[in-house]
Image (cartoon, rainbow, N blue to C red):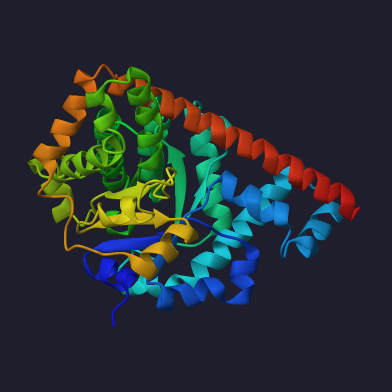
Amino acid sequence: MTSPLAQLAANGVSIWLDDLSRSRIVSGGLKDLISSRSVSGVTTNPTIFAGALAKGEGYAEQVAELAAAGASATEAIFEITTRDVADACDIFAGVYAESNGFDGRVSIEVEPGLANDTAGTVKQAKELFAKVNRENVMIKIPATKPGLAAITEVIALGISVNVTLIFSLARYREVIEAYISGIEQAKANGHDISKIHSVASFFVSRVDTEIDARLVAVATEEAIALKSRAAIANARLAYQVYEQDFNNERWAALAAAGANKQRPLMASTGVKDPNLSDTLYVTELVAPELVNTMPEKTMEAVFDHGVVPADSITGHYAQAQDVLNAVAAAGVSYDEATEKLETEGVDKFIVSWNELVETVATALEGAK
């Protein structure tokens, strides 16, 4: 019997685990997921590292070394997280080689406080890339306005980028433009553009959370009937944008020179509403060349009882647009909702970052 996760991978969706910890690495559990769960990559963020370090599993020895060396909390975070990411990159090196660089990727995020600082983002992206020192690392940069310029600049340096916190279709088009411009500059700079990869992380469940709250506030029968439909519609239309914006002469010239399309990645695919199917944001978003980064709970739900179609996106564009049109007709502003989500997304990561700093500072103090 082929598992639903294996079927998902066979249908063109790369399964990346949205979690990382040293205990996963040293126990062999992360490596086992490659064969047992068809996992082909890993994503991290400040919230994930804050959770891993708060549990303290496997970090005591390195924390003691850093404390003895007089490292600050920020310096310690840099050393701890880049070691985990480098080790995870080594675990996925075989997947990376077999997939010609499309998978086997491990993402590490620039400090969220730099989300509106282009120069600071570029500087830290270079530092993270140099420190991890693995070809299959991806540097995560948020899709804020200042982040767009940083994305172009970092791609132009030949560094692979995971663009995160994308909520709106308009911003997604800007992300693709930033990537293509970066590839053009990388080519002009003499980089081997066939080695540069990127994913664009389109957040899913948070869109339903925000728009559903607004629909409930409207409280009409029509509004309530639209609950839990906007996120999937939005994500499906994002895939349409992907198909459209990499289908032109400008991109064809770059592709002929070896460039890789920036793949769409479905993030935030854990279901927040207990009334919904726990596999909803996976099984309703299946199409070739897609990445879905899943929390372990979601991944296990799909493995256990997911029903995976061959393609649940490309035949649904008109229907998806109808949903977003109906949301607007009900009096809910898509633009206001997605702008709020971007701001909140950055703010939430800053809160997690501060928690991470506090956890590490306490651990360093305790190790002295």
